[in-house]
Amino acid sequence: MHGSEDARATSSQAYTFFVGGKDGWVLNPPENYNHWAERNRFQVNDTLFFKYKKGSDSVLVVTKDRYHSCDNTNPIQSFTEGDSVFKFDRSGPFYFISGKGDHCQKGQKLVVVVLAVRNKTRHAPSPSPSPAADTPTLPPTAPTPEGESSHSGAPAPDQSPSDIRDAPAPLPSGKSGAVAGCRVFSVGLALVISIGVNVVLRSFVM
Image 1 (cartoon, rainbow, N blue to C red):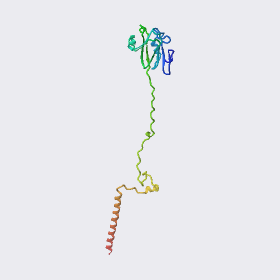
Image 2 (image 1 turned 180 degrees about the vertical axis):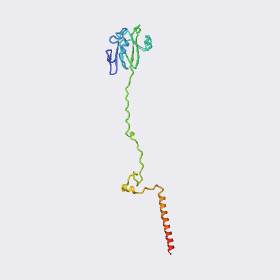
Image 3 (image 1 turned 90 degrees about the vertical axis):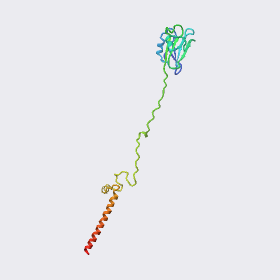
Image 4 (image 1 turned 120 degrees about the vertical axis):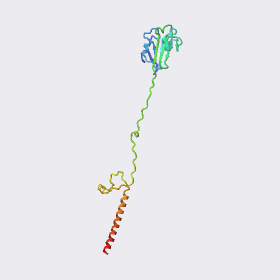
């Protein structure tokens, strides 16, 4: 993990790891290289430092298949100048072997898995519901005809409850004209009858 004796911070976000600790890149390290890698955490931009003397060894970056077969031909990258530095430019596995003789077959090889980069994203808060959206919309109130009360059952300001009780019930619309016509007809008929009776009486008197 970061902060161990085998790693040194080179910046606020990157570390340099010393492969093999103080013994460096050797044939028989005190700790197996892959065990050493498993207890550390590697990230993009971290670096590996391979400590060895020029001409005594080399470091080869190879594919997975060449790593398992210890094939040191056609490496991806080769370091032979001693005290080599390799920087991780991506996440995923990296495979390293010794380029000298049968050192790879004897265990001088290393696999490092670099952690994936995780971007921290911020989520915009959900907008608060509008107060208008929570208030139910009421239907418009129909206009009240002039001269009528807005409440059909309420008395007019100049009427008492007793006046309302004594007042005749209003006739349904359409029937008031017929009733008025009947009343006129009745009055006329009564007048004709009265005149006829007077004429008959006068004839008997004379």
